Amino acid sequence: MSRIIVYIAIAILVSSVQKLSGQVKSDSTKTEYITKKIELLEFQKEQIVKAEKEKLKLEVQRISDLESKGKISKELAQKEKEAAAKTAALNIKNKTAIIDNKIALLKRGEEPTADVIKEKEDEDYSVVFSVGDDIDGYYQGWLNIKCKEGCERVYDRRTYSDLIVAFGLNHSLIDGISFNDSPNKVGGSKFFELGWQWKTRVFKNSNAVRFSYGISYQSNGIKADDNQYFVKNGDLTELENFDGDVRKAKLRMDNLVVPLYLEFGPSKRIDREDYFRYSTRHKFVFGIGGYAGLNLSTRQKLKFTTDGDKSKEKIKDNYNTENFIYGIAGYIGVGDISLYAKYDLNSMFKDPNTDQHNISLGLRLEL
Image 1 (cartoon, one colour):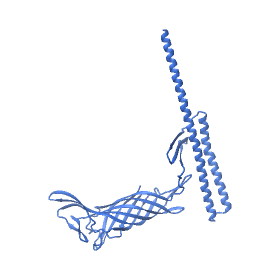
Image 2 (image 1 turned 135 degrees about the vertical axis):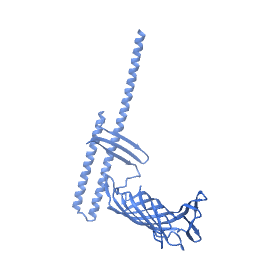
Image 3 (image 1 turned 60 degrees about the horizontal axis):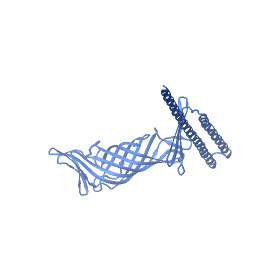
Image 4 (image 1 turned 90 degrees about the horizontal axis):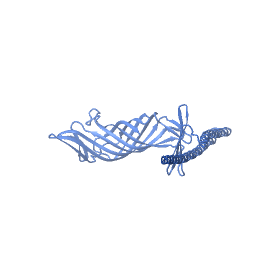
């Protein structure tokens, strides 16, 4: 009986020591957690002050520019600068007061309501994301990105870039032959374009007009009709009847071009604390311009049946196509989707072939 009592006493003692050890470890972990959160909140305060000061600096510069251009008087400029400084001071006071209250709660061992703070660092940036108190059913959140030495957010970025994809129907307009009498399949030929473009705002204080320029790969296909295919006879490229059943006879020209457009359309200005941007999302857009470049390759793809046997063949040849490509193009649409048309001013084939110009109609996407 005495041994049982001793064993029970030892078990209670071991259990108590483990609980105490766990409690000490738990308290230590909690202390480290609170210390880290306070450090992040202090960092956030620094970011708020920095952002407000930068915003004030830009506003003062804007007012000074208006004064130097004679658009406002010296007295009015001074009043606006004082008002901007007062606004910045109040913003700093109110925003940092919220964080000071959270720090005070943490120091007393209390957890701020719905407060989540995460930090990520790499070689260039330190990022802090925090979600604040519940306000009218929504959580107030913000993202602070601290740019380390050597990098800085551009206040006004005038040039943007996009991936361009275009596709649709292709055809050729032949001199002296009407559209309805064309030997090529109407609606059977297609084009594809893939490129990269840059857009630069023309005016400093308006995004109504933009230059659009870049580089694009164009693939234009022309399908022959009536069991014909393309044949190169010396300097001439002609359509001849095929000895068999042609299921597909497509001449494809691959070009590398440099497009240039003048783009028009309204946009929405989005202002932030330390930068602003223009957005054309869901806005009308219209572009007109042209392109110039080189023909990279030309080839014909044949699918045919002879004596009941199905065959296919790819013939790579220049087919007397022009080396230098140039034309006019335009697009009209809303946001990133537009109706797109282009027309080659150069003849498809060199002299002495009949003038034949490639024309395309389809969709243009900015991704």
